[in-house]
Length: 132
Image 1 (cartoon, rainbow, N blue to C red):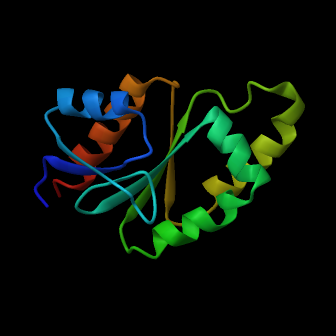
Image 2 (cartoon, rainbow, N blue to C red; image 1 turned 90 degrees about the vertical axis):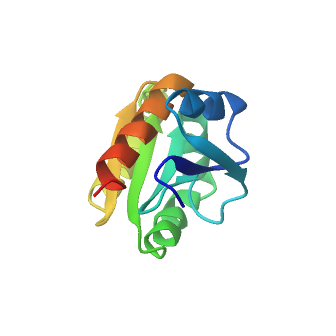
């Protein structure tokens, strides 16, 4: 895979593909077995607020990091938005964030919940990690 090619899970919004194209990437939209995006040496998961809460409820948050770590690539989680917006779930959300922060091999990247911010985070990760 070339440095300017990125794989994006085909369940991600089309606007994310458009934003990454703006940064000069050739985007391959495909069904990924692990993560929401991948580069030559990296894999990443995007957790928007609603998906973050739902992954706690259905317990995907427990096995998704292990699936990503099994790839042998550098792993990133992009937390899009403010995961503490819902005050009723504040304790549960903070517990899960702290558990992820302490998870070896996963780097958390908090960003605002916009496709442009998510695309910029992915671009920055790829520029730093895949160009080594």
